[in-house]
Image (cartoon, rainbow, N blue to C red; front, top):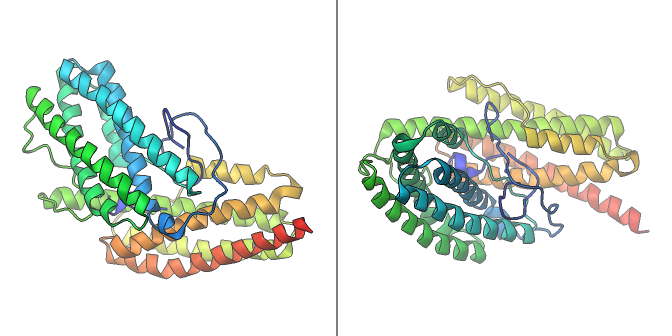
Length: 367
């Protein structure tokens, strides 16, 4: 579910290990994953404070993924030497930042899904179509907007993170982001960008937004992203539950799957109704990384199905709990806060039940 990029605004590492699970972007399905497969998700159980910070960690990773992608474009497409140099700096610094956040997440046993939202994906694709001076100006304008967004994000969420390691890393990265923003403004002025009006992308993490229309558009984009992420989680749980009803050997696991199917179908309907009330055309569809997880469970051997199913369900539900908590606290939309608060209780119940079944299976296997 949402990063709460979507309301303060899934693995992907070019030069670092990939964090697996719950991915989430190109939308029609805005989930874009790059990089080479890395180690499987750590078996360590995440601390509660780190789990609470998962939405911010996801956003920190996502921001660097975007910066590396756009920086590489600048190296190949920019006509201005200063723009090329800035792009190289972005690749270097954000690859390092990306690697640090990814390794922290992996060591913490935290399933993280860095993703590009539709606005980010659209920006990257538009830049891919440009060259020369047009590219230089568009790229530097995007760099100012992105670094202003990231500055707000790290100042607000990063400083309030529960885990001391997250606060420390956020503070270090904030200094780098602020330096990047200052340099971006200088380079932008060299290529003819009016830096006083290059600030249409603002953070929804608590910073002020000067342009109400831009803020409203951003909020609606964020809501769309969040709803698609909600849909991915619900649809995956329904499909996994249907598999469990057919294939699980353990009767209690079958019953868990049946209850999950029933509950998550209902919640999917409620979130879809919310989208329609906001005038949004919304067709739930399973994202590619969630499809991969369903395929992995479907391909599990009969003897290992129950364990594979429960492991996948637990990982996903843990991430949902974190995202729902963040939505409940931070979402701008009252309807979202209400639904997130209501569903959180249901998801926590299913998570507790799935963990209980995991423990029972492990105890039986150890005897």
